[in-house]
Length: 110
Image 1 (spheres, rainbow, N blue to C red):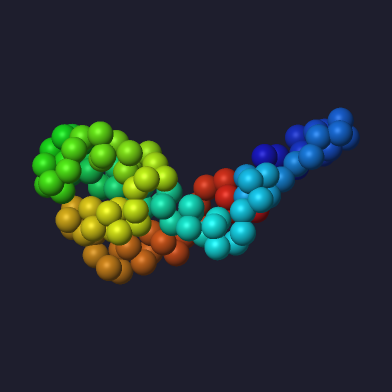
Image 2: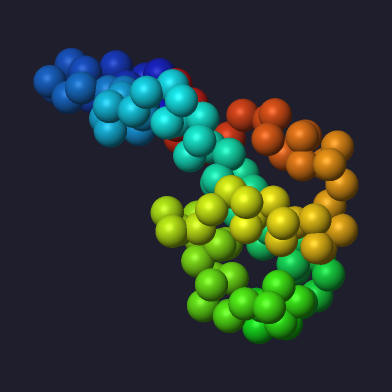
């Protein structure tokens, strides 16, 4: 959000902060969510780069299309393990995974 808009909102009595502050997340919880979102986003990008449908990816993973959709949406029921395994199946390297996880993302960053 632009600083001018923040200032206007504060003058009108609004409290301005991050999603992590609003949800009262610990730094560890924020980092965990960030990692899941980064992996989910990259899974979708890798799938599209390989011109695969969610159904085709599901077959590669021995899973279902709806599970792939949940993975790409960052659904809380999806484990980090499944996201990492899926990216590895799509050809991502360990170095590439480290790069994905090391970059700041989303609204959880203050």
